[in-house]
Length: 229
Image (cartoon, rainbow, N blue to C red):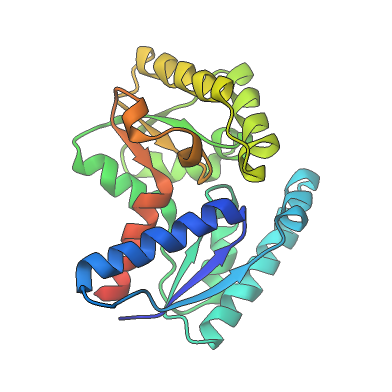
C-alpha cells in the first residue's frame, strides 16, 4: 500500500470525512486491522480563505505546492487535495511533485461517464461554479456542465462559507439546495455533482432523485484505488 499525502483543513469538517472514507475503503479492500497509511497537512482555513477572498491564488498555489513537496519528503507516494475550490491551483501542485496527484475532476468525470451520463449539474463555491478551472476540466472529458443561476450561486456560496465550513447545518439551507438541484434537473442536468466537499454534509444521495456525485466520496475512493494499485 502506498502512502497517501493529504492537503486538508479546507475545511477540517470535510477533511475528517476524507480520512473516514479513505480508512473505511482500505479496511473494506484489505480486511482485518488494515487502515490507510496517511501523511496529512491540515491548514488553518481562515488563512486560506483570506487568500481566496483577496484573489491571491498564486500565493495560495505556492503555499500548497510547497507543502505537497513536504508531504512527499515525509513519505507520501500519492497526493490528494481535500478541496474542490483549491483545485484551481492544481497545476502548481502537480509541478512541485513527481508522485501521482489525483485530480478530483478526473475522478468525478470517470464516475459520471461510468453511469452513461453526458449532462451534469454542478454545485460548489462561486469560484468553482464561475471559474473555468473546474468546468473546463469536466467538459474536456466530454461532459456538458450546467450551473445554477447567479442568485442561486450566491446563496450556495454563502451557505458554504457562513454555515457549512463552520459546522452549521440548517434545514432551510437544505431545502434551498434541493430546490437548486431540482431546477438544474429541469434545465437538462441528468445528475448533479456536489462540487464542494462540505455540501455532502448537508445533502445526501437519499435526498435527491437524480444521480448524485459526492465529490469527497469519489475522490477518496480513487485515492485508495491508486494507493493499492
